[in-house]
Figure 1 (cartoon, rainbow, N blue to C red):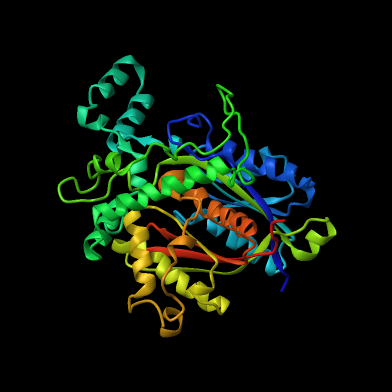
Figure 2: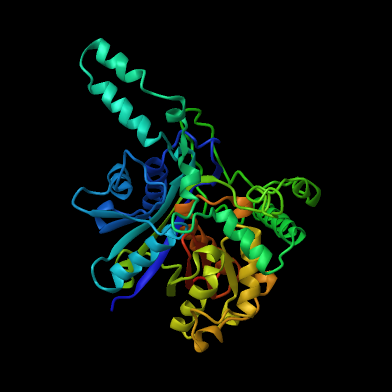
Length: 431
């Protein structure tokens, strides 16, 4: 098999939905990171064999958003592109598929992208309203159209919020936040613990931004129509405090719950891209790899407890790599909810009996807090769902390089009851 290596990557700043990127749709966010990646590595677009994009909120006007991104970024028409969706792990899925394509000899150079514009998730009208509008548009004469118009009732006008629909599991009927509430209750994770974790996420993210640790991975963008430069992530709050977090009301279970908008991830716009190559191709082009994927795994779990998916997938990824959790120098665990991260860290120490064989479970263990999300996580930085998996791998490799360390774990829960995990190896050590 060919050896797949990661040459590098870049991402946009992550920006709160309805903010400065609200008029920048997913295809444009993707184009921006792909063009930046090509220019940073002085890459001839003809050398790109394929572009794979992870995306969740599929734009209705760009069904295969990957192909749209590729063509608009200047990749030749003769090259191929496809879009993948694995909910929150779609960006991670694009990376694992890129690695597979190269290792199996189907490609020499693949760009893996993760992107979502949550500002542009559509609002839907009811089916009954759509049917009545259609009848009105096809009715003959003014009288026929007026007659069809009068059949529209107020209840037909009630909108269906696409974002809410997307965050609700269609099998169990629970929103993602409800599954986090379930974990908090079952594992006795207090509101105070969740708020304290959220505060640390903001503090670590602010420290990372102020020190410039995230600057190498983040490009500057000039979104239309204002074209004012966005230099870094907009989400981390320097003034965040436990007092402010404590005043926030529960959002999902308003009477008994502990999940708030303060201890959950933000709704965000953003994109990330990684350049993945056959090792011999990289050498031919004079490009030095920054690392590789040692192993990756996805695993299923109870959809009502989807937040603990990383426990199952991490055990399998460690087993495939022949490693233990203690071998990881750093861990990036996506912060969908503070309760969900805390649940995972508890179950890493005491794995559930189901879904994991004894050998895989034995590879888990305690996570050193000093190794976990050292630059903050999605609670502060935001979670553009299709992009986050790619961002985790990119951030992890960058921090391993800065610390002159070797192995890291990137993992995340996935709506619908899955977990995704990747173990990366850093090749480069900072001078």
